[in-house]
Length: 350
Ligand code: UD1
Ligand code: UDP
Image (cartoon, rainbow, N blue to C red; front, side):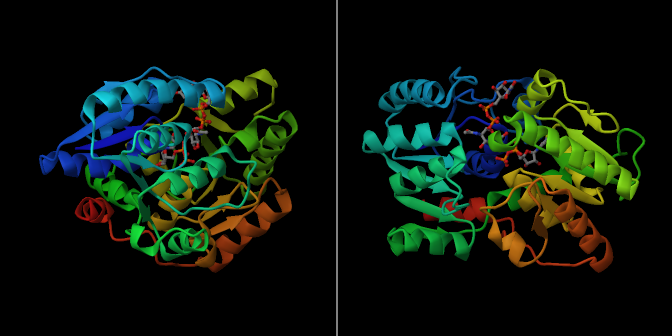
């Protein structure tokens, strides 16, 4: 029996190809959703878009302090794992839900498989960096998306025999979604390639008043300098803080978080994307859309090496240089994230 533990928007998306494939193959697969993300537009819409079955077990962890969230998820997950006694627990990425799942399984002596293993930003201010280091070192099977990720694991002393370079399931999820989407009209009277898309949600980018204010100012300057609308599907965390700090967002098109199909339609037709999201750095790379990453580092260095992505932090000059580069050079690249058969590879390793 395989148990999958997940709890946020990107985990639903990135685990969807594996869950669907395991169900098609009639494997014994049990899903446990922690409830870290709970709003319908951060959760249900993705189950619908991606034709996923309801989770077998759902916890109600919600958003709390990191300690309470991980602890409550661990207590709930432990009861379920003792009851169902799976052969292996799979977790994806670097969230608190993934950490809780890996830690409970390892302590119960159940094997742990980590999908998207070996990513490192080397920035320990990020809760995700702490989580991914711990999850990798709790895991028995490490599914690295690329050779760069596998090399980081080897350097940290993880046995080569436990590491499998399989690509990233985001390529599988994207291929599935693109087939289903068709070519719907863009919302907000947008024309293809005549707008910039932006997302912002990282704790270290939005929780501080001045830093968040800088990002809003950066979006406003970029919008007026390049005469492009900036469409901002807003993560609930960021929306709450914009309201709390009473920031002036004049000139920006702030919209609700989008379902996966609507978001991909916006991304695929954007002139470029500005983001601090992990998944969107990968998706823009696969789709050939230039990406400005609103951080000083990234755990996705493959995208920097092929120049699909440029790090700009919240520096307006760097951001404008990066936009100028993409506008003038129009670079093309080949995605390092695999052929869309990552879920199949993971299941055959299992
Ligand atoms: C979490 C992950 C992050 C991931 C992101 C994906 C951790 C440490 N962080 O960050 O790695 O990139 O998910 O989006 O696990 N909220 C809602 N409704 C929801 C979800 C969140 O209103 O469905 C609001 C709540 O006010 C909450 C805040 O967003 O306090 C933050 O949610 P949380 O899950 O703590 O962190 P994320 O920023 O979503
Ligand atoms: N996404 C979405 N709707 C949105 C914003 C993002 O469907 O309004 C998708 C996006 O395509 C990507 C994933 O959510 O697959 C990324 O999630 P997020 O940025 O929240 O998390 P991260 O990848 O940074 O962990």
